[in-house]
View (cartoon, rainbow, N blue to C red):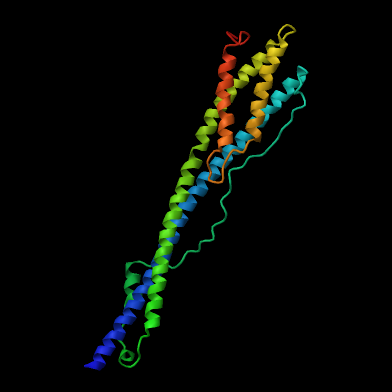
Length: 250
């Protein structure tokens, strides 16, 4: 009776170890799948937004170049202003995650099936082997949970990046409106009230320069507070210039 009891105990332990090892692989594989999917979604969104941001930087540089040419033509004090700064969406580091073995339902049956063996009657399955396998399973489970948290972080970053093209679109409309007023102001300059108009031109020139030289994106992929401060000035200047006599009806 004792011999058969020992065999059953050894068999049960080997079966449990096989189950622990299977679950370890499954937790690791699931964790990697969770991370890789979220990572790939963020990578795609970042690439699209980076392309739009790069084009937008070139647009603002062209605007500033136009401003510089205009300022030089009226011999303003800012005629030598020339600023150039490239702004990039932060790149994601290449993923170091390696795909592990993926097991289906049939694979699990094969992976965890343990045939009774004559060795169960004579060889003890050590408690160390049993608890080590269980410990690895628990660590793999914790790894999967960490990957779920990382997935949530990547999703938050993706949502932030997805807002960038809309932000750029709206800001460019504001700049286009501002540049319309800039051109009218430059055309309206005459000897009698040049100082007021030049001051308006200087405000617009400074604003566009600040848009190019202020950090655009945080490390968390969100638009920086400093840039938002500059951004808000666009509508403020647009509104302040709307009441200028030389722009009304022009």
